[in-house]
Length: 115
Image 1 (cartoon, rainbow, N blue to C red):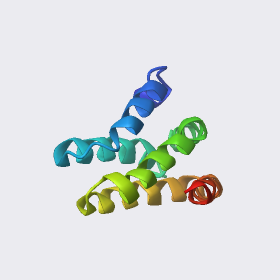
Image 2 (image 1 turned 90 degrees about the horizontal axis):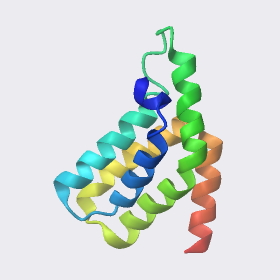
Image 3 (image 1 turned 30 degrees about the horizontal axis):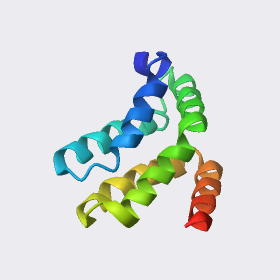
Image 4 (image 1 turned 120 degrees about the vertical axis):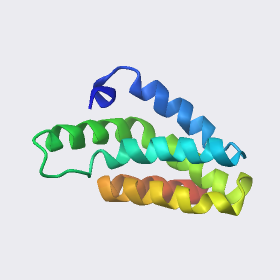
């Protein structure tokens, strides 16, 4: 929760977004796990008293960072990364879809039209 509220979260997501195209197994897995955990924070422990606040924070973060993040991971999986990264990327995209389906669909559609 503290990380989601901190001012450093957007720069961290931006840095992780650039790192999504690393063709290094361990580095890519770590980056995808970090991104997955941030997005999943908006869906897990729904019975927790801070759930609504966490969900709102994740949505704010995704509104700021999702366009570039989705572009980077989809571009990476199509043109740069080896096939073993597909499962981690698909888990991340699934979480984004579950938290903000309308945003993910619009961003993915726009990206696919550009390629």
